[in-house]
Length: 175
Image (cartoon, rainbow, N blue to C red):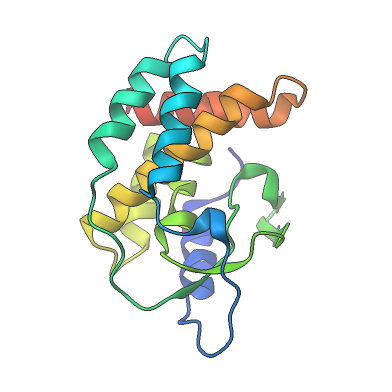
């Protein structure tokens, strides 16, 4: 959906520096599997009329107990998806919307592997970003479920975000 995996890999890795001293903490980007978040995801997907909501809920339930991030808090964009990047003729031109800038688990930003890319580019992105363990990728997939659940249930009036939601559902469930 617009960005090259090598460029995305470089920008994600550069952004994920250790956050030292005073740093923002975003309540919504805190622990992926908090009780409140789990209850909201279950409620949102159970009540959804989306034809694949039950599959997303099954996937969420399979990922929700992935071990938490144990590393240092890293700087995060916090809302990395195709609507927040500009791509020009030569590739990535800018990353936009730093309203969710925070510190914490890099899995939040790595969900872009599902929200932004197709299967081949996802694989290239994953190869490009080194030093990320399997648990972090599982949490990133869970974050992609979180984002998809929001986008497929609340964006009827925003076609671009609805399309990103549908893309993410397909990427999560079909590849």
